[in-house]
Image (cartoon, rainbow, N blue to C red; front, side, top):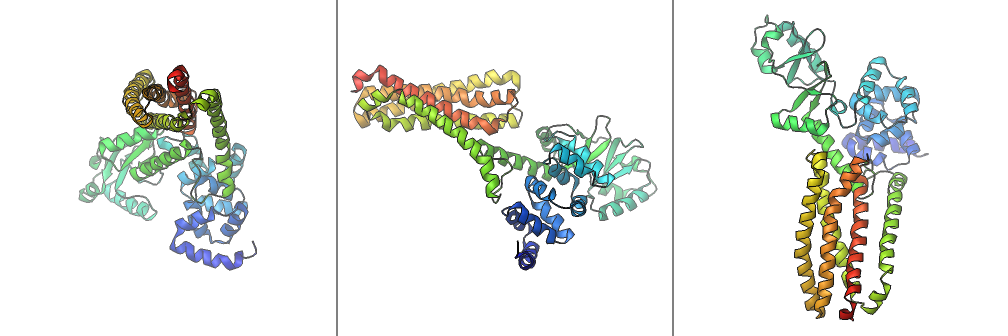
Length: 436
């Protein structure tokens, strides 16, 4: 980009005022141009810029850098963020790039990459204060000061034995009030609660909430201290997951951001638009089966969107409840049938009530009670199927290993459209002598 030399000082000045927005602006550039901009930044600013980019875009940039700059940036990144970026690399490239790092950073990243994506191990930070239980309090205070200057949070200090197993915790008040010649073991609190590194993030959130902690230690199967999960990190991760699920529900990628490159947005959206187009033609095919009755009773076309719309809304309500239930682990496999049955009963009740209201409106509007009967029965059938489908589809998707948020909404819309049109127009055929 020939104007890079002129633009770079302006970009750097803007970055100093608003680094987050600058990173988002960088994501709107083609990757080649974004790499050129990144190369022109001083090392510290480049690290901060990458830190504010989403992991997918940051990975695309880093793999285009020469190894010295790549190494400088990754070495200065937090291990969790570096691991999130490395997770976006293909397996062969991931191993190749890990070889470029110092052993300590490489080991940190590799340890995090071994944990499942939604586990405590992926969310934990390795910046914490750990003290040996046989330390004197005066020595512990000196070490806390050193570690705090290096960026470790100084609210709590965790206590470990010679094998690095977690044995206790101390808050700073206890340390300050203790005799400087006492051992850490005599001052620590032994009733410390920890979570395993493979524990799911929702379970970790429940533990933090129930105990009113703002941080929780993470241990391995032998209770060795690995890291700490902070509540703010957990909440941020869950918020990000929720927004990603929301995007996936409507056929967008979970990695897409407001200013993601146009090519990236098109690449992730177009396939699902084609799927949606196929389902729309399926619904159109059902309508084509009833061309004769529609041509004879043209008023049916007026009420078709009403039937389809109500079915879609009712199904979306069930879908929202079941997706939340899956995230919060409120629907175990053994209770899936019970949940679907409950949603079916709600669909029956909703169908009766909405069917009666819609039927009455159609009767009063068009002056034909049989038209009201036809749309009322069509509404009843569609809302029953909407309730069943909204509950069953995400549970089925999860059982076969698919992301419920990614495909449930499109399948649900197809079901409610096809069932709604078929039921409504089918009843119209049955009662056509009273409609014409």
